[in-house]
Length: 309
Ligand code: CP
Image (cartoon, rainbow, N blue to C red):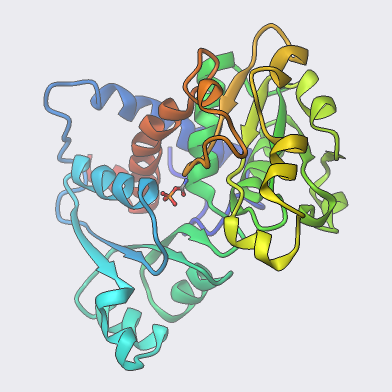
């Protein structure tokens, strides 16, 4: 079954039927990834541009692997070694690359709206790999797939997202996606790192981490962006850890069954202690594994791969 969206800019406004189809397709690709030969020829001849204007480990690598598993050609573009350094505009850069016949552009950029801008000035399909503090839809989809695998459902799950909500594209995409799928979300973090417009999200908000985690099935911890501390948004890293850091001790109030998630990279000993990150409730590496299957599903469904079967 095809999906209704042409590009993946974010999960806001994406129908639950599309999310369900992406999850179902990713689940099928997970089986492919367990085979001795992990490559399928279903997107042979398609070309993907992996364009990262901001650093990445997980997203960049898993998009590259996903494209290769589908037999796409993939070109990695790095802004730091491109003619952007010589003053070329983003529009000229992407239009020149498009002229080399690219089918799908995967883009990460520090500015909100760049994926939409690229779609507006080219004829390629665009997948957002994280734009500023706006959205990171494939991260949320892999998170949602991981939750579904662990609980067998999404409807009715209670998901606590803890940390720097204000600057988090992961929190935004998860909020939109989870709400579409019938889960409930509680956001928790320092007041200075909470956006003023959470009513629009239709979520609960608390500044008490114990209150956030005690009823949660899923505890999703966000990376503290260390550069924020110098902007005075929280007093010190020690105080942050004291009030919001997830320690084994703190988890005593939790339900019997819960999972710990983190999108990475982790500041160990700050937002999350190592024994929790590597402990029995952690599904952090499963998230990374699911990232490849989810990105295969997005490339396949958005890149017209199903017509090649
Ligand atoms: N979760 C995530 O986006 O990680 P990277 O920045 O390493 O891609």
